[in-house]
Figure: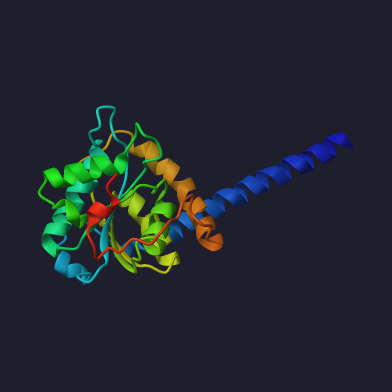
Amino acid sequence: MRTKVLKKIVIILILLVILFAAACLIINHLVVSMNRDRVYPNGTVYADLHFSDADCILVLGAGVREDGTPSHMLEDRILTGVSLYEESGIKLLMSGDHGRVDYNEVGCMKEFAIANGVPSEDIFMDHAGFSTYDSLYRARDVFGAKKVVIVSQTYHLYRAVAIARALGLDAVGVSADLRSYRGQPIRDVREVGARVKAAAMTVFKPEPKYLGEPICLKGSGDITND
């Protein structure tokens, strides 16, 4: 009797695992397929995006080295954002993790953009962009953005654009793939789970860890300096 019960339990568990895996694959397929036409390759002429009236170019954060310099992925995101700024004149919103005194993604991003010719006043910083979801929620509710150009690597952009659209933002993504990145296969696997989590968050729409007072993107980005 016990053996039969155990077999039933094992079969049920296997079926649940199969159903969960199938759900993950379906969600991933939908995230990519429904947003593919809004993700543009690097080097696309900005005018072709029909987003000349975007409220900001949102550059999503990534790792910063111990010496304070951007990782390769982050460097390429900043350079892509700078290129789009030069073509459009639309202000940059750097969003990343500045949750500790000794770790500051957005400060690194702004310094690098300034070193590449962008005036400080045209660069806003979102110090509480602890996740892609938080960055987009805060772009809408703190910075008042309605129409955004998102900059990140391609694998990440499908999720970012999907979240943006679910939050009511009119969004496109521009790829920052300027080279190959070490460890990308691992990121691709993790992204499967991240897309599933994002799908759940866009259903329930929880508030991010921090919100705060509104900041107008039409003013000077220096208001967001440390």
